[in-house]
Length: 480
Ligand SMILES: Cc1cc2nc3c(=O)[nH]c(=O)nc-3n(C[C@H](O)[C@H](O)[C@H](O)COP(=O)(O)O)c2cc1C
Image (cartoon, rainbow, N blue to C red; front, side, top):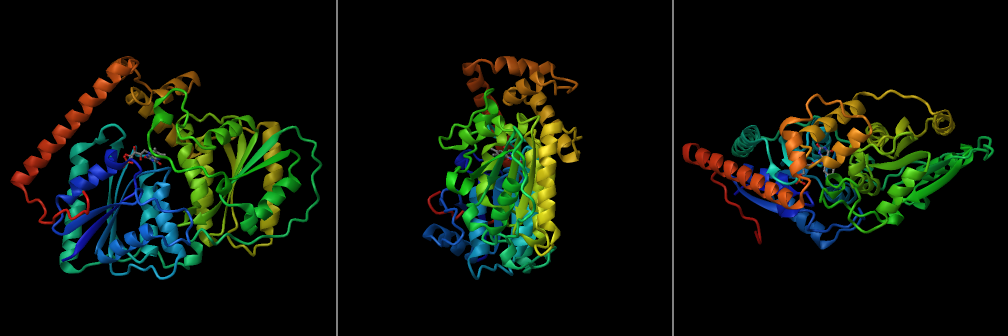
């Protein structure tokens, strides 16, 4: 009997909106299906480690005919715990799922859905899967998925496609060419280069903070870039190597977003690093490529700083981003790092990639960019937002206006910083915001809305199951 495996990557367990969407979809499958919680497996961040929990997931993947990546959008990709799985699959020998099908069920607040699906499709195809499609739903951290009928129909369509493919033995064609695994593994860190230009005098009074994912002593390209920054910047340079600082994965509690003060509740060094980013003048991200995105250490840091993406509190600062080790995939990774940097308010003056690592101009490009950063910081360059930054800022402005009751941290910030030009901040949104000022009322309103949405969903499902044809598959998850 053929089988569908839902690999769940949300750290929000039973509260996960993507899990509730996938559960809905599973009701329409004609084949047995199973849910495996990738986050609960507590995979290590070491891509070479083949621990029993990892091998168990791999066994499940081998047994299945279809894998459905189930996750909430987490800073324009999957939650970092799911990335640990990708890193291991790309780094360790012999993982190829050719002949099998992959699909995605993702919930998000509709920021960069297409981009994320593109990346997940790319990862799936590089692992050998044929990618059959995806569902994107608006997922609310309090209520599960919210845009009812459209989402539910998309789920039924995807389930139908999977049913037909399994029945006919059809596997979709790949869209991306097969790449050398080295470029997909986080262990491919890029080449070092000679840094021998004239040293800058340290006559600046600014501070530049360099944040790297990897431990620099194990990263030749990263080490040459850090050396260049130290040598060519006229300002003081500080370095934080996240691999040694152990910024743990975000748990998706949303308190950084709900609370006006926006502090992460997890107790590790993250808040200290965040405070330092606010004190310095320039910020540089250096990440190595993994899965065509960035390494899991810097990704975990970016996930944790989600609150700042909605309150761009690093305004007035400048920076640049570098991605190493991914060959031509570096282009995407560098763009990603730079765009996420922009979102926090820091103006990213360049997103560099080693590209062709033999290019003799790379060392010069890094040097020029370091010198430009000094100038930008000192002269306070004016740089206009590009589409991604501006578009996403507007999205959040609108979210804060419409969902002001739960995103009130953004609402306050946007208002205070005169970023709030949304035409209708009044009406029911204003009433909700006032009501949500009371803790007791907030709890009641959340419970009321959650129940209402769940009830409506169940009623629609009942109706469809009565009048239509639910799938014939069974849920065979162990320890449900
Ligand atoms: C750390 C973090 C990062 C997020 N990044 C994105 C994002 O890039 N795009 C987006 O549309 N939503 C983003 N969201 C919102 C979630 O994707 C959304 O609430 C989703 O429904 C959560 O699904 P889950 O409950 O299954 O985890 C993010 C949420 C968190 C906590």
